[in-house]
Image (cartoon, rainbow, N blue to C red):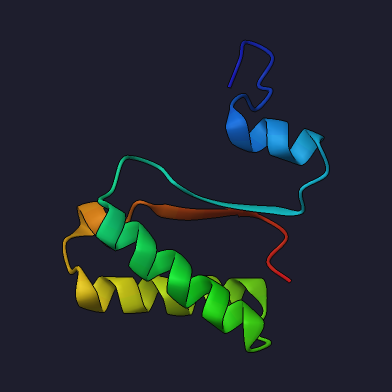
Length: 82
């Protein structure tokens, strides 16, 4: 946030460009963690799950495969959950 409480960063830029939602890692993760998470996320979206449900399922799958919080906890969702 800047001094005027305006959100700054890549997510803010994507929202300003018209994105409805942004899924990203809050800190660096290994390629294996990212691959597991985003493969599951897009599989659930393709299957017709809503964004929020797909995110939750992908996080649960990643948590099962990589139980350390530094791995699965890095993923965040911002924006419209629907």
